[in-house]
Image (cartoon, rainbow, N blue to C red; front, top):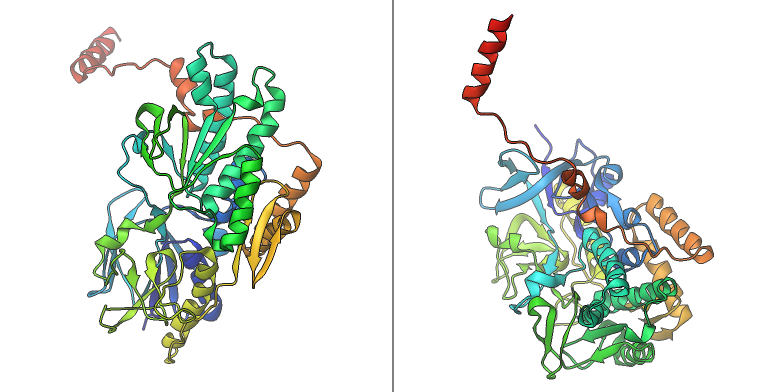
Length: 457
């Protein structure tokens, strides 16, 4: 008899940590763990702003699945359908036809995607910050704008190139904004053609505060610090339009910008719409505190589990509320989820997830930060150290911890790299310029040529 198959959909925080713990608690005789994800690595998203800023190597912000999950089966592909009624998933591999895979237990953890709005022009110029590719692109794009501004004779192009707009005042938006402002400030030392007063960083936030995760007092402190650095904070403001780079804000202001970074929240993966699992009003998989998928009436779907950004998990420490879509909850839920599946496989009963939110830490650029942890409020350099040590302790694998620490040590002694590698996004462009396309010969001509050649012999 074959051991039960546990399929893990998605290799983010929940997927990786769940699979890793399951592979340690259940050997191959107890269960087969299959991890399905389109990319061969897990992205540690809290490090994306630092990767964009060049503080750490982009490769060190990701964790290779095959290296970390040696006891699991890795499938590089996308789950396009889940039919829990028949306990099958449909997989579209990176190449070749799709196929079905049966399972006994499924962990639904595809994570989230950027929550965008139907704003004119956003799909044309907006840049997200959910993947390592977006982080690399953002860095290259911003540094490239400095090169454009330094040489253009057009004052309007110069002004638009030096306007950098960030939408969203949560962790991702504020940390990316602060880090990239530091990058530009360092890079301007090598651009005598540019005046630092020409550079404008603008934050657009729909609510009246930033960093709600660290509390109102620390959020207000962060706002004052950013404003003191010359960052234009537009609170209680919406982005109405950005067609052709013309930024239209709800406060009536209008200007051109060639950089628009969108970090205004997340929503569950659209893949969930291709499942027969019960979804809540916001599109999340409905779960019990045990992380078992259940109908809206509370009936458990045996063998179905979910956690993280895509799941609607009751917060037992806040009756009536839900666990927030944060890495803090995702990592801890993954541990309980793996233990619960192992218990059920062995004939036991699952336990409930209960975790009181400890607070948050945020970086505000190099040597600057804010923190509100267990009721203790910290700011400045100590908060920045807390931010760094917390995240280096959370990134999976000893290998990655060492590499990130080495990057930080080198950055402490050496000057920041401020070179753009924009060719990474168009690697074949130069080759195509010297290799003109050649039309293939018609088949009839090829056959005629062959006869002539054979007759000449």
